[in-house]
Image (cartoon, rainbow, N blue to C red; front, side, top):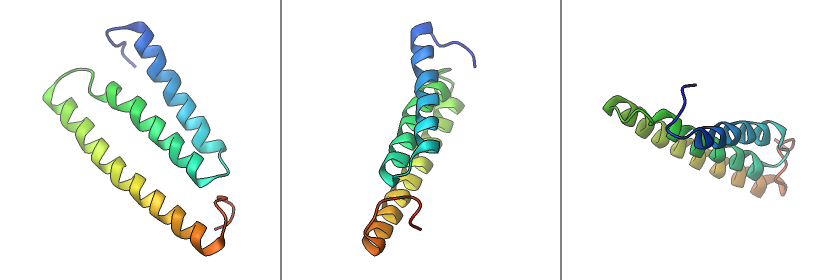
Length: 93
C-alpha cells in the first residue's frame, strides 16, 4: 500500500485493518463479528479515498453505502437468529 501523508496514520490504519480482520475471523459471537467488520470499514475508507481524486472519493462512497447495507443485514439476521434460538453464538445457526 502506498504511504499516506503521515507514516503514523498509515501504521494505525493498517493495524486497525489487521485487528478488524482478526476479530471477525476469531469471533464466536455475532456482535463481535459485526464490530470487526465495522473496524475494517473505518480503516479501509481513508485508504481508499487518500488520493483525493474524484474516482477515489466515488469508490469510497460506493464502498461505504454497500457496507452499510451489508452491516444492517448482518445485524438484522443476527437479531433474528438470536430471537429464534435464544443465543448470539455464531455456531447456533
